[in-house]
Image 1: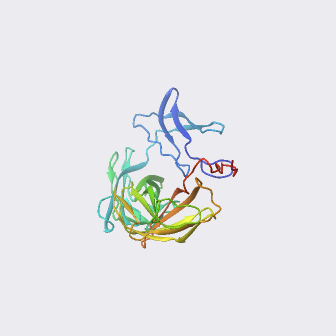
Image 2 (image 1 turned 90 degrees about the vertical axis):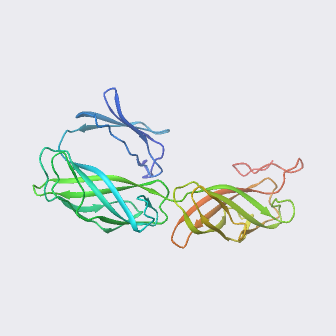
Image 3 (image 1 turned 135 degrees about the horizontal axis):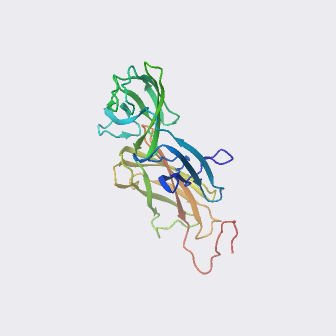
Length: 317
């Protein structure tokens, strides 16, 4: 789903219904996409797709569900044993073999089924996209004669759903577009806390230079080795003197910090105590993993003699 400016809309409600029966419901992600899981018991006929989001006019589309024999996805087997961790799950940075199974919903066998793999995902590079299948029996399934091969970008966000299309034909001239979603698991950093190292009050005061250590937790489903960080300030009152730090290995559910190799920051004198400085922590590895983690650093200690602010408009009282 996109707005009139062509930007994706996140959090929109998408409902597919037939009469008073709701067949499926979902919400769009950050890219405006939603996956609706359809029930096996749904019947052919008219259906309505309703899309609703805050500050948008509701939108309805009439859809005709047809009971036509076709090819649909069957099992999807992931082989990541050659250039991966051999866990049968696609992780960012892996090159995997895909066995894209197909099921024939018709009453006659389909022969000489073949075609190519296609995707619009920016996270995927197709290394081997041609595929062929043995005869697929009526009501039965088949796996390809040889696997598809794709490479997944190392900075693919955790829980990304890669949409893959097979553009196929068969010996009888049938044409099919079979699509399936492939989940990707990656590391996902969550900001935990920071520590100011200044040999004084453990607070960054106006006019002070201090070391800064940051703690993060991996709430994703993959590990990263030799993780580094770059600190970026979004306010000129806070200067990053040493912007590089080392976090080490980033295991699943582990919390790490940069105590042994941390950052250095300088707070300019005109800064008011209590101000929140917006910072971005760019995490990266030599293998191409990258993630931006935003957080705020509070300046000084507020007392009754200090002004308050600035507020969201920049005013101080």
